[in-house]
Figure 1: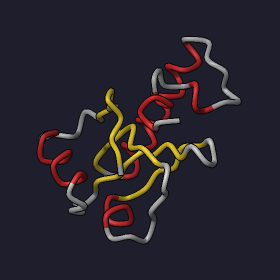
Figure 2: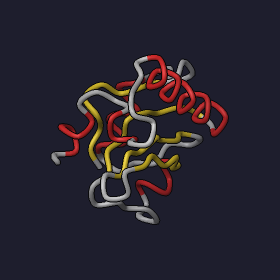
Figure 3: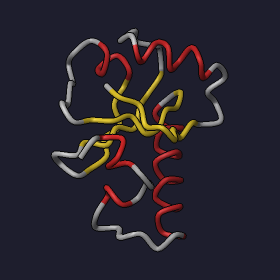
Figure 4: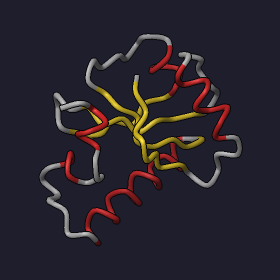
Length: 108
């Protein structure tokens, strides 16, 4: 799983280096949730690091765009991403446009 160049990080992530290290090596972390953009479906999904790292969910064309500790914080972070898209007058019917450069990170 790839990580976006400009990763959204919730305030409750205290050690970003450790989290990135774990995700790159498929090491699940307790309570860690990821916001994943799936280009084939053109949508975002909220997935626990356990599901992501242990193979219960493995999208081929997915990219992690945000991370947070706990579901509630992940929902708040997704709401923030959406609020930013609204402020910047992005096409809300096309989630791939919500984050600048996301399609470059995916490689599409």
